[in-house]
Image (cartoon, rainbow, N blue to C red; front, side):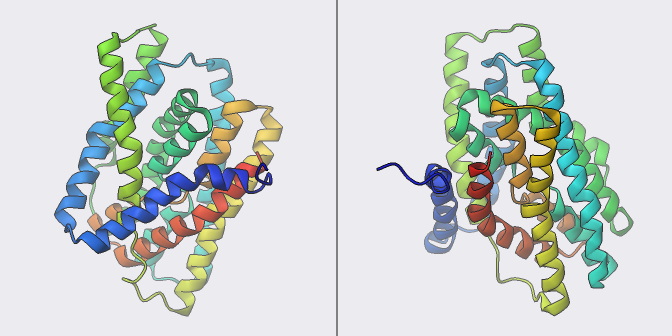
Length: 304
């Protein structure tokens, strides 16, 4: 008997969410230490995911006339999160705490996004999400750094220029436009790296879950609930309207909706820590958002 429509996406995404939970269990059960997980995250970020992005782009015929509306919809979704995120100021957070948590209203977890897009559409889904990730990372990072700028120093342009996900997207896009076809050996090599990227990336997401390191308090809990609602409810809801308004459909419509429904990336915690922000609260917010995202993301996918 086939699963009910509302349960089908949840069942389809269950293996990916199981990897996240496994990562959380492995960190606590095997006691591998922070150095192991830090090294794994670097391997994923600098080698495995760039290979996945590049390979997905060069292997897929991209309809650039439809990609334009896709990017317009995803930018509209991100702007929704940025504007509504300012509402967290109403909860009387300290300036540094607000600046730190504000980015959780619109930043997104690329690992989960690419895994879900690949699950739904295979290589074409990965290619579409790669374009979105590559072009949405710069404005997301700039907005987050700008909000935290008064509390620390960082060269956002230097960071963006060295971002391996952006570099891989640019290289893959240029190769796609130029008609480059990688040799079979190269294609298989990149494919093997990409396969490792999905599994290890989701394990790393789970290993990064931290739900007990911050004293949130009543006001902080209200602000956290508001920001979670913006990221996991308001952004996807606005995206559904933008999808209908723009007329995009198929893989691009689904990728736009998945992008809008993604929980916040762990890089938000790293940025807050590096720039003297409220790292523990950001870590708590990311962790709770990731767990809730396992429930909300299948719901939005079912509405696509």
